[in-house]
Length: 340
Ligand code: EPU
Image (cartoon, rainbow, N blue to C red):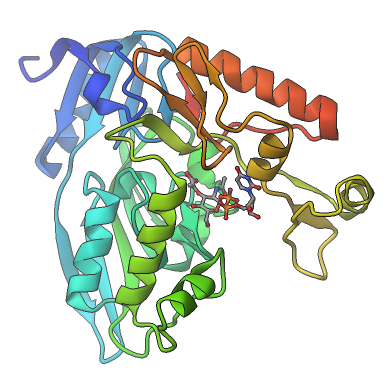
């Protein structure tokens, strides 16, 4: 197949910047070629779909075929006085989509500004930040099941969204290409979500008392830029671990030893979400360098590639952190990124 490339470098296709390559590589740039995916998949005994490469750790060269979702397009599907339904190609960069929404005056995704990666990956791990998740704005999506070679249409409920989790990390794991996602956004009377993660303090500091969706996005961008490394400068994949959810009893027990341990959870639930960044920071890992990789200096949840590091080094650093956090707090951390 002439459009499948061989031995393709993935260095600029993963935000850690690891210097690996793929045995075969297919860039899907037009929905017309979805029909060819069956042939593309059949050239090797393994395949994977790649989006923005911002949630993946390549620990070695990939010996199968990479299908790179580059499907573009943002279309207004329908609208009422209050809402806009917007259909977005899976290969659209997430942050440019957020910026496009702000320019059109559409509200709903402003808290998710500056999240790396592409629109097609947003439902997979139900991306979230500052009190908003993909599940709050997504209506439906179109996907292609690469194993059964059939089209799928899933609505919000079908996706089985939970914290950083969906059907695409479970029953449909590793077999679907999400080619189009539809979001329902507000055109006016926007729901302003400013109560989470320092946004209010940031707006106060700037003397903004009636924030617009643009103010929220700007605040989120400034907070993220202060805490999180820019992958164009320092290779990283955002939060490397999920925030663990532990039983309330265990939380209360830990709180006796660590009175300033933060925890989030609805009053009626029996479990509490604890920030992994706090646990790792308190365990002394923040800002530490190990060979060519390390733990970011401003946010301990983020592992970084200082230059010539590789996926094996990141994997082994993350295993050491998991072991140490278990020893210190009895909490088992789970990786949020995909290890290949
Ligand atoms: N903290 C520390 N030390 C650190 C990092 C955090 O003490 O090194 C404490 C903070 O002081 C705060 C708490 O931990 O009390 C939470 O920190 P933060 O607000 O930075 O959020 P997070 O829980 O570490 C999550 C998401 C981020 C998202 C932010 C904001 C996960 C795994 N991560 O991080 O998502 O941007 O909330 O909503 O849920 C991503 O998934 O890639 C990502 C960046």
